[in-house]
Length: 149
Length: 255
Image: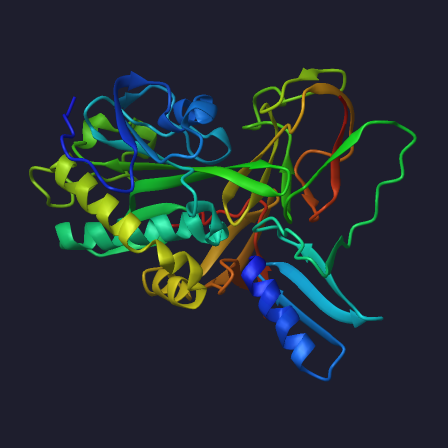
């Protein structure tokens, strides 16, 4: 699912008399709906591409913000898969709470379709919290870590 | 070390190593330097060749084709990357089928089989920053020259080399050349999931057979029905069709 696909969906909706289109593809669900003059795109599931919003489009992730008393910036899962804290079962995790990470450091692996997806830190900072256990299923947009920049 | 004299238009450079821990690891260590470009890394020997979840992949000196493709050129990461591992398996299957007479199969998820023995594997790792894939590292290992004694005793009955399969003088340059041409020449197949998964299923190892699977540390019996259009393994467990996209799924009784 790329931007072009979404643009086509929006065009389709705008031409039609219906108010909502929802399709599931690549483990990702996209819903485009008419809403008081705006077109709203909702996406969830396996993130196979970034979804830059075109001008009239509001892009919304379906996952709610995690409730947390901790400050910090959330690192979210780019896809549906299985979360792994270490590159193999018998070695140390990539990171622990309290670790300093640098931009570009690998934080975890999300395995999906037998592809090991390595999530890298977007910024340097300290790991405040790890919000998911090893080898657990993870949803698109789910918070994995909190980082204090 | 073989000298790979050729160039490929889709590759910015080819780096060859006499010995390295793992070509995937080296590619990932140098990912900032490689950003935005496509590289091939190839090694005569890997001292810590990797399978999935860090499993050891035996990759002795001069015995096989041990390489990684690092893809980061603009455009490459816009394809449907979920099927990249399955796609790479198909490419290896196609090429090997032109070089040796035996049947070549694809075993879920990432193994290349000659008959019922493993001759190669694929390990695909994609690097993400936020919601965007920034590079993909595809490791491939193909056994070329091994005789029985070259394999560790534990895998002698389950592994095979192309030489043992009847290619008397395996030519790594020829094999690499064909792999790269097929890989880069057919990359749009990634965006044609129906065609891609259909081809995978045509060569699937033990499709429709009753098999045992390890799913999240639990052993289940089921019938393997191939992969769905989204690349999920489809297993009929006690009459119920179940799709698996992640977790530990392993076909175990392959003898």
